[in-house]
Amino acid sequence: MTELQDVIETTTIEDALALIDQGLGGLTERQLVSTAEVTDLLLDVRSLLSESPAE
Image (cartoon, rainbow, N blue to C red):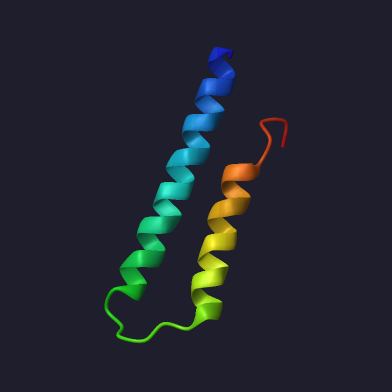
């Protein structure tokens, strides 16, 4: 793996972690969370993690 690929993958993982932290921050204050909101959060994380380095 090249150094550029390492940087891109690290950035993608950091973006995904930030998205998770943001989503969980908003969800933890509530007692009831819709499945649609959880699904949206998971799909956003999945799309970040599945991006190819060429994109």
